[in-house]
Length: 442
Ligand code: UGA
Image 1 (cartoon, rainbow, N blue to C red):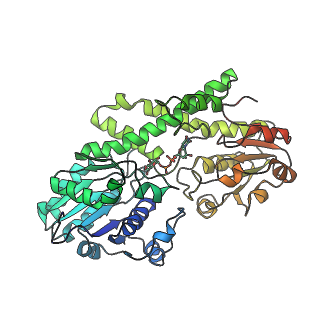
Image 2: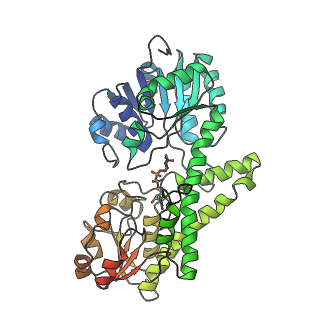
Image 3: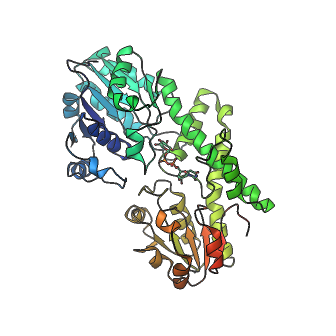
């Protein structure tokens, strides 16, 4: 048994209760640890204390039960735990590609002076390589426990919409550590998933930080690769859906992150590749990552190309057209609209003069706050009623299962842009729809 203080690791704190921290805290409690979640936002803490997540994540709510409490107090955190996970946000800095690390530094500087006994602080947030080493030095300087207060970096790979599964059964655990004691503590903490077969990789701090950004850069590159192929398909009348299917059958390539369409969004991939580019520049290795600029450009072009398809179907101009949009979350099974390609397309069409009515099963509240100028409907049928063009922009299952006849009865014109290559084109065409998707012949 590994001890920080007198006991084996059993009391854990999780600082930052966003998508990542809440899932992590709830899953650790489910694994049998006593967990205290902490956030500076009183409203979030109140909701979580009532057992209600402040965001949509399938399977999370039933885990917000005993063994788990929440606070807004760093002092309570310091007293409570022997292992402290840092899960605060690292968004893109306004007007720059770099990551805004103010929440991470704020957290370490608030917590450090309160840590008066040996403990392990474990960063989970995605940070530019080199951050952890800097933080480790600062932590041991500002905490009364001094070098007894260690820092480790344990990046998180969960996908929104699958957060519970990915946390309980991750495909790997990466632990950036500077001592055998820290490694042993993390092995003990993750004994459940390790026993179930999850590989555990101990690394130094910079490697652990890099694994995370490299993984997201690779996923983004795969998505932009297939979307670049879609552009080539359009120029050659080839079919990117078949192309992707055929490529995926090569096990060296694989089908994950190879679905063509509107491209990647969310709070992670877009900002992570930009922060990686910015960090590479600081390190003098910008050439090594210059391809990520293209990855970003291909991705942003997808949005413009989907708007072009809608404009084409509308007869050349979106002005005064009634447009029905299905889906605004950045992906299905999430209410997250951060850098959502779907919401971006909806807002662009509005700027071009269209009357855009949007429906999403769970993301309408979030979307409405950021884009009050759009119209919001309570169902898919309401959103597309009288539409001259319908766009499927987030592939929620209910849209994939839609009946082209039923939809056809309410629209003004049977025009559909399948922004996610999620529909089987044949039944839609048979029902009289003009079906268009990026990279597909028509
Ligand atoms: C991503 C990574 O997949 C996680 O491993 C990582 O932990 C997380 O970022 C993070 O850094 O926190 P997530 O953003 O939840 O997870 O979503 P993904 O499922 O990777 O999808 C990202 C975007 O790419 C979505 O907009 C999705 O619609 C798009 N996508 C995904 C495609 O356009 N094509 C695909 O084939 C796959």
